[in-house]
Image (cartoon, rainbow, N blue to C red):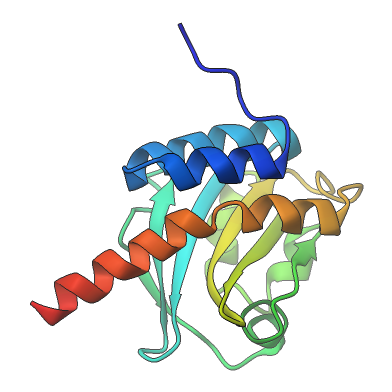
Length: 171
């Protein structure tokens, strides 16, 4: 018997807060957000600004975008908007993301162009992003405040991931 997907951001947040396994939480978050917003690529990326990197902690396309992969946090308009100000980014086509995503050719090669990058905030800073990608214009009609609220439900995942990362670096 499968558990029904949460129908609100609050319900998802409650489920994730009660979940004691990061991977189980990531799978639940993926299923809920893809059901809500659609998409063919779903990743969760933890931000480590003190090290100047972001690390992929979850992906539904591991052969193309592996878990654990790191990329530098660049000083650009995307980072200012999403990571510093904590505002969602929506790109309608690959042309919208080319200036910010060095892997735009790989994204385009997968038939993807539309992007939603949703910051997850804690303590006044962005601790990670929820990233949804799909065909061109797939997210044009998405209410960004609704998408942002759903992303905030993932705070327990990112908080647990950061705690685990801090614990492993202290060892």
